[in-house]
Amino acid sequence: MSHHKIFALVLGLMLVFSTTAASARDDEAKARGEKLGRVLFKTSCSPEAQKQFERALAMLHSFFFPETIKTFSSIPETDPSCAIAYWGIAISQRPNPLVPPFSAEVLKRGLDAVEKGEAIGAKTQRERDWLAALKMFYKDYETVDQDTRTKNYEKAMEALVKKYPDDVEARIFYALALNETFDHKSMANLEKAIRILEPLDRKYPDHPGITHYLIHSYDFPPIAPRGVPAANKYAKIAPSAPHALHMPSHIYSMVGMWEASIAANQRTIVASNEYAAKNNLDGIYPALPHSWDFMQYAYLQLGQEGKAKALAEEVGTVTKIFAPRYPTECGAAATQARYPLERQDWKGAAAL
Image (cartoon, rainbow, N blue to C red; front, side, top):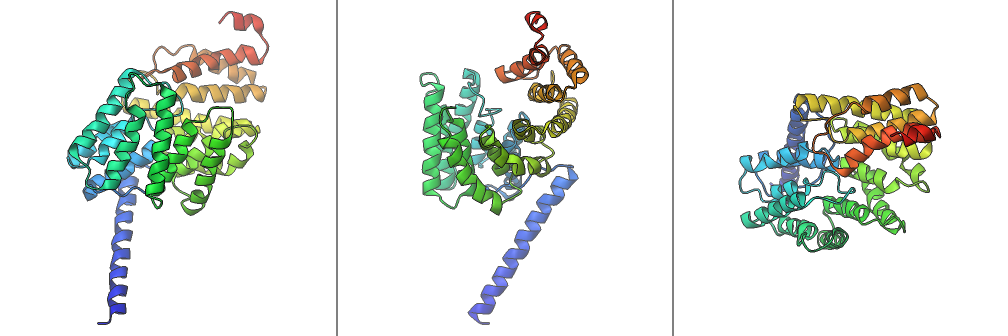
């Protein structure tokens, strides 16, 4: 047999196995009734652990806390030598990396996970470098401030991209790191993130992280209209993640698409409540107040004061939030405060 025929045969077999593996992953997702998008991170772990890692990573890209931690944490049970799983456990400690600061307990758990991964020893230099890059975010958290550690992490991700220019996930997480170091003074970091993500979006249109971080990068009035295409498709890419259902409303609110914002957050509320009930959360789903806030604002812009009032009253009955943090408590408070403030009801505002 000629070399050309052998090459063609090998290539054909590779395509068959690749298609079969992808089909198997799709079948498993369908069996769970789950849709989270497609990711691009090849690990050195066992085939079963690889599938778990891809599922967890897709959740991570949609900030699906706390499910992401649970899913990454199950990987070592399948493959104890899968060191990169601890990168996933570590990075998942941040429910939303764009909303710091994080408690000492969270930072310690993150650092411990990175060091556990280092101790196990990843099988490839690339995986060791991923762990080392994330360590820059957690290292010396007791003495180094949040801004400095975040900038150190951004630089580490930039170096990772330079070392592995074909690593698509490295570029995606670098774009996210640029969002993390955005100082609200200059748009340079956001524009840089957009320049990274837009070409990737054209090539990988169903990747949850690319679309998600594009929305965050566009989430400012001067450039928000550019984010409408990403907003329109994100919920279709990862409808199983509540945050993916909510994120389009960031752009819709910026461009005055109030009905679309309300619809997005109504879907988020349903998904959040279903998740809380299914998983017996001790309190409401933590991202729920943020959706209330956006929906409340949209109601008021449309003059739907009856719905706005009912929502404010409903929020007032909430007694417990699962894993509360400043952003969640802020969202609940803002939902109630917007009702009198947007209507210039100063007496009502003073009574809060």
